[in-house]
Picture 1 (cartoon, rainbow, N blue to C red):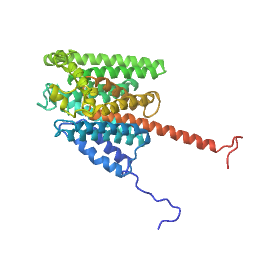
Picture 2 (tube, rainbow, N blue to C red):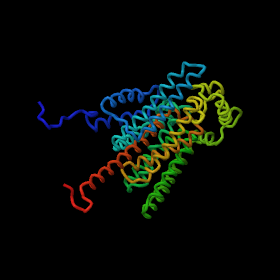
Picture 3 (cartoon, helix red, strand yellow):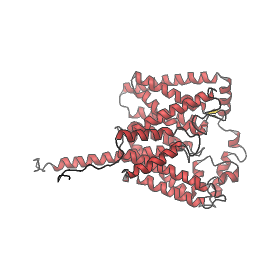
Picture 4 (cartoon, rainbow, N blue to C red):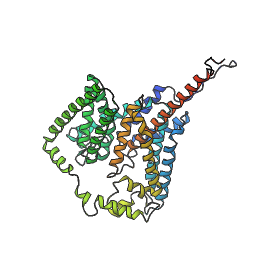
Length: 422
């Protein structure tokens, strides 16, 4: 029997915080290895998400926009799938869309319950990126046979170099930020790791990824410079950035001294490729596609656009209209705008979540810019970025509410005259 008045301990989650964080770390780590689909990442998440919900995972009210708009996005996709000529591919495609939307909400809910999980996710992502980048570099130089290379370009643990490269951007920016802000030892260590990721980014030979790396690194430097009040720290940023650029230049010079690298670089460095600007090329298909969708407001389903025009959309805005209809397009566009507006203040609010939030926001915004020339619909790490930002929003909201409660509790102890209440 339990004595009266004695509290009874009840299980409220996984056995220990360290154990649950280890599971989370491994889940994020698996995101860097997508040799087949469904990937181990999907299987593992499919196992732990229901378990976590059974053991007490709650959905913070602050992430309601994410949940609602993702639901509308999927509803648009289901309606569009019903319009497809070939219905065989539609269930699998929408199942993947639904799973990735669920993963974004899952990560957001976890971070909303404990902002310390941001560090776990960042650490796992960096580890995964370093390993998959290393595999891509080794594969490109023929040290692993044909593995980890696709179309003559480094692909690491991915099926497509155009996904491999962007996956490396977030950890690259985190390491760049650490190199700029840490003391000499930390700057050297993080800078070295950043150079490894940069090598992987370069050898992916993805023009969009090259532009994304430059844009996000520049934006991180600007944000740090604007938020730093110390003139000496600002000068250190400039000095470290100059050293980093010099090292990158040396790395590029060494790589381009190899004829095979130089030839592929010359080919890929052209801004407009033949398949971009030619007849029925990428840009002409954009115009044709948007005109087509004026007559199909419900969408046409996945893969149907490629069957009509010979190539897929290669544009997230056109992709959302064709595959999710105008309902999905409005929901996705609204979610992107809401995310950017709601998370923007967090970049300038000092605290434990600022570092991860700054990197996630800049990289997410960069992906949205890049998405005008590439389809990011089923990129796992994009949904992870959604989860990171909305989790940070929820964690920040919880911190503000806690402070308000503490202030009200403190004020309630005192009478207006200044005496302490009984």
